[in-house]
Image (cartoon, rainbow, N blue to C red; front, side, top):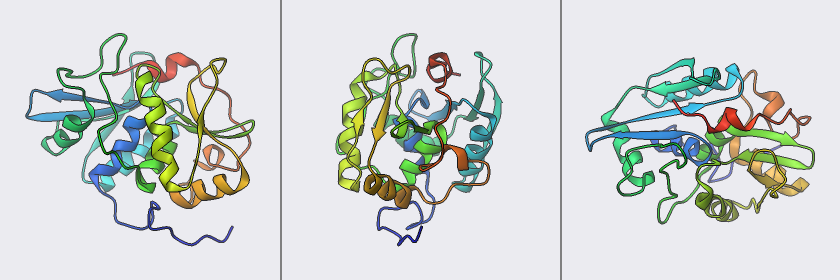
Length: 216
């Protein structure tokens, strides 16, 4: 597919730590250590996602380690870092230091604007082709975020909707040829190993809900 680079695409600017907010759009978690540092982590379904994301972290100057979460799934996690504190202060609700049993502690920041680079991180952590369109996983422990994330996609030219209550795992769903082409333009080409999880590929198996609700 011939594509021109959009002003908002992941390829339009250099990588930055702010791109990692895309992981918080899905089931990524950020944990504050007082007001001095923060740690970002995400549990994923397949090992390739963890290794690709670890490289994306390092490209942004934030070393991250791949390990096994308590649920047995792969995870990628940074150490506590001062430079991740602004992300925590924006995304954690006042009074929340991080995830608890039945609440992620996250909230979409006021004035949040999604970028192609953030969207790419979101796709790498929790994106997959569905039977009719492309699914971007959302955090089941943060249901108040879901509609806000749908709204954040619209200015990028990718109108979307939430999957229905019968869906095994909640997700934002993008359908239609033009919208899927716009999504692909925004997130760029898949890294090696991610082709099957990119828009236009055959549907992937639905992950078990425990795989996306567990935290480090």
